Length: 400
Image (cartoon, rainbow, N blue to C red; front, side):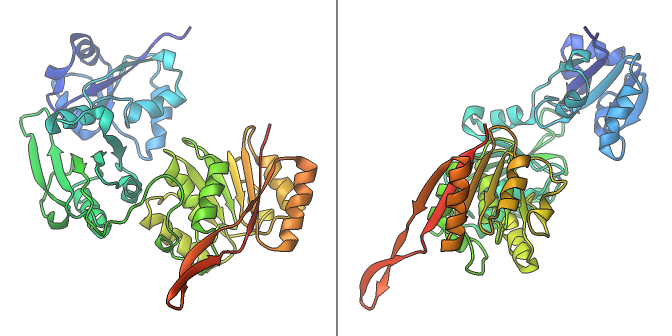
């Protein structure tokens, strides 16, 4: 069994004084210490070779491997395994070679300052990531703790809240928690104007106004929340489609013929770290999909120009595939062969010709066929009547 040679130590604003004796001894006996400028300042009394985070950051693993055999310490903020560098290192280096020394995380400190139970809040990070991804978590009565990117992040998030009818949400910025320079800034989203330190944690108590946009993470967002040209998977059908696709944490969806991106975006909103690749030949629809992804909190939606099956070559294998139109034997074979075991494939058809193709493929490969027929109440003169949407034939199956 491998012997530990790498120590990853969480450190707070109180520096070495805040470490447990064992963790402090590890830092004080290190030959090499790796960290950011702030981490080096917090441990400046220790004599050791000092290395900064490499650029690009992915070079860190090679750098660490080159130091094997020496007493190496990586300093991180708070808990190294909670939205921090420890998880990245642990995926590349055998965990048996690593000893983690956690400190109180920014989330724990912020929850204590706010008097909130961590079990009842959403913990997020937008540090080094698109800030728009937090939009998916804006809900009535929701409390959020967010690791930010910099001094401008609270203002950006305040604008997101205000634009969506959550302008009365209470915002608190906490900086330098646990240190002599700790600061707190309080306000509401619609009038937020504080200038805050770059290194901060954001606490939000979401308050919805009467006209607030309700954007649940359960699939089935209203059609008018999306930019579209009329060709899209409608709300009720979309909800049924996502139920068969089964979004899961970190899973990848191929959305073939993504159009305005409604299915891919709802897939990404429905599960933490869910990913999606949208394949769409039309530039105008890719533009709409990109705009929808930003507005609805799925900024990492990847859009590819092309048509299946050719556009599928070289893509990472998916956990689920949605084909909203244009299913052929060639597209099915390419998609099915790429799908991971236990992967889900869902295809929808509107025309009689495409329905016939679904039925033929279902007879050959099994799965479930469903006819989805939706009618919406609409005005008819001074009265109200049912106006049917085009019926949709849906074929779904799981790869065993």
